[in-house]
Figure (cartoon, rainbow, N blue to C red):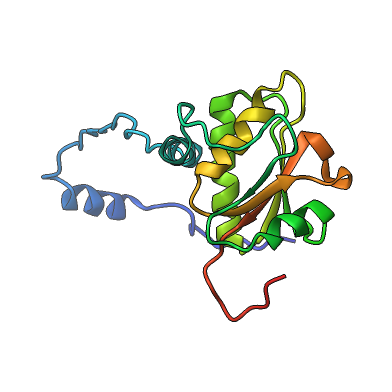
Length: 185
């Protein structure tokens, strides 16, 4: 059973008159809503990353420079001053790739961007060896990828990949990492 208080929810006339007297000089407030236009959107993170990749690929990789390497036979390159034994280690599969980049279906410009991103990722994550799968197809990327990689200053060595990593359709690369106390393979 509910107990009710007598006149607890009713306002008597004297209280109502007192309220009217206290607000006698007040005027109605007019709402002035201000609506701002959408703030100019900041460039998206993907767009910035794409611009950075494009800049890096344009800086390092030129289509006009043709290095003196044989891209029709077995691809083999060691940077001048580096140990020639590195190419032999790559050929035999002694050094396993820690990253694999598949360029199937990409054009030359997009492939340059992805190569620059791969080298950047290898340096950032301290990966010494990577595999670039370019495929055979029309032989466009098969010839261009080694030519691009030779131009990059951080590539120590490159060799056609062993069969288990792609054979004639791939190359293994060694990235020059900053010297550290870690053991290098």
